[in-house]
Image (cartoon, rainbow, N blue to C red; front, side, top):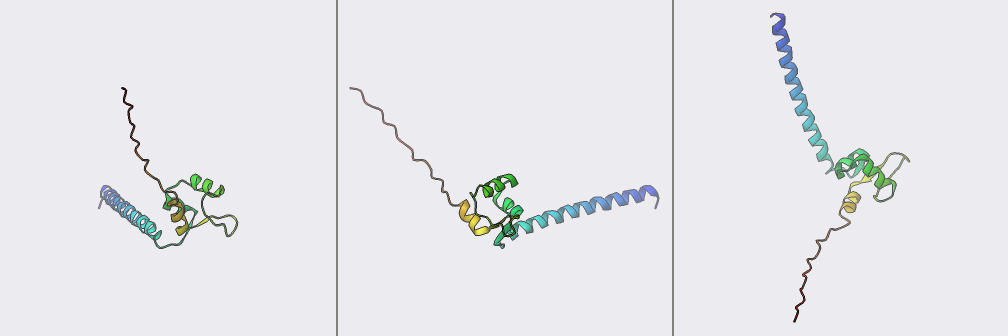
Length: 107
């Protein structure tokens, strides 16, 4: 095998390895996301992903006491998944009633 053939072989195997690695990474992310269904306590990063909030949004909610959280060591934030679900569903949105405007009849 000459050098050009070796380079082509290496390039093909590298791109093949990259594709496999990318697929494995996606599968790992899917599995991690499914673990939220099983876990009862979420760390800060997991809670951000679970709720779809940015880190700063969740931190502000916790800092201001708007969302239930725990700090067992005084520094790291943890969240009870059931409490997060209750908090998320706590405020129901009600569809505004349609008001019928009546026109005054003039005589």
